[in-house]
Amino acid sequence: MVKHFTRELVAEQAIIVETPKVAHEVDRSFELPKGLYVATVGLYLGFLAVMAAGLSSPGLIIPMAIFAFFILAGFGLPTIWARMQPPHRSRNISWSRLVSQGVATHTGRVSARDAAVQVLVLPVLIFCWGIAAVTIAAFT
Picture 1 (spheres, rainbow, N blue to C red):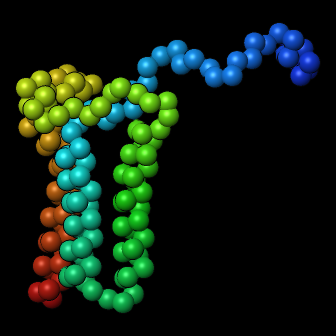
Picture 2 (tube, rainbow, N blue to C red):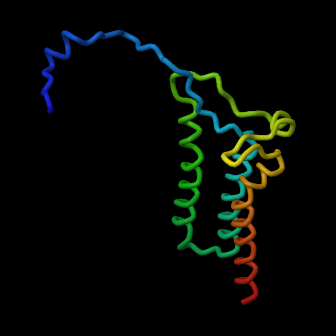
Picture 3 (cartoon, helix red, strand yellow):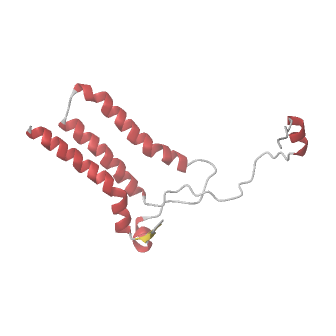
């Protein structure tokens, strides 16, 4: 059922190469234009800025810094991952290509407007929620 392979047995059967060949092309792009990702990060950080300005308190400095760090890390680490080795030819699509061709999703092809709405609806709602919360706090 289970056989133990010793290091010597593996060494005499194995083919050892200096640099392995990549058998397939990796695609580490996220397909959408960078502007949508920048807008998403900007809206999340804008929410933090609205909350920090409207509900300013010395006790909130550290939590706001931690939240900002998590937002930047949440978008920064995938950016680093997309630039990892081995180098790849895939790139994010341009705005003009998105407008002319749209983007393929699991449920079918969507237009540039629909793709932008799908990506930005949650960050916009969160930003507006921050404005509403600060406005309500200002009137109470």
